[in-house]
Length: 323
Ligand SMILES: O=P(O)(O)OC[C@H]1O[C@H](OP(=O)(O)O)[C@H](O)[C@@H]1O
Image 1 (tube, rainbow, N blue to C red):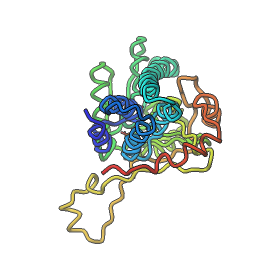
Image 2: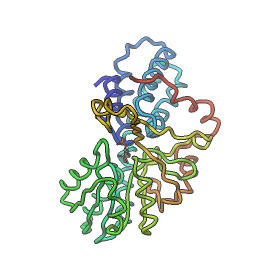
Image 3: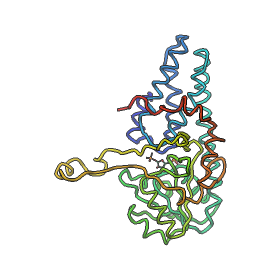
Image 4: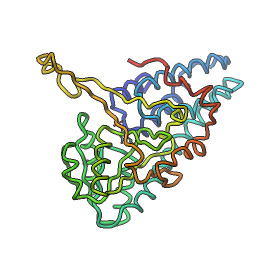
């Protein structure tokens, strides 16, 4: 698959899920480099790779895993002295990111499973590999668990989730998103994934997550967020807001019906923000932490100083818009 094909598949959600988007983008960058002729001109190579990175960055705006992964790979490429060195660094960093991303999921699954008691009912939302990993690991350990899963309009990612749960013989209850509050009294805890986590511990995840967290808070049920460290958004330290992706209105209301309703406006935000106060714990590969410690993850695990953030990372999202 070419880099442009990967970009298109991310934008059209054939490739989706914050972690997978990051892994596929990094693999696309690595493979794109192999298609470029060797000229010995390191500056031209870096320019070409920056352009490729900007195409990937323009695909979806919310999941911070995408710019974080690209930054991890491109950072040392930018200072390479020869084309060969730049190529080698790119390859090594890309492979290292993909490997560490998968390892992170295994660690999160092991830690998350410890928080799922035997005999419990877990509610989840959307289709998060990190969250599902915890549930599958709890099942693998022999725990008798059930899952309540939402539909996730308009893309119905809940169907992917219930298929996985069914394949793993986990008893599952499936319902429309608006039934969440009604179902809350029947469950024991909530486990979801994340697309981005801000410096104040707020979690950006699939639209509807904040309502689930609000209902869980009302019903005194724990909310656990599972997120690899590369889903923490360092630029929020500088005050930058996470952009909430708005997708096409015809994902919600078909064009032929919309055409008959000239006074109706359709909004289709695909993520929302859950404040830290509604989250009991964030499980990362570096350990479980209260959401208010998000800053420590940004400093210690992403390891980007403020200077670097300001000089290089700012503006990373302003690259070419992919259409
Ligand atoms: O990385 P993992 O845990 O798989 O997924 C994290 C999140 O990414 C997804 O976004 P979308 O479906 O791509 O819009 C969902 O919001 C999910 O909770």
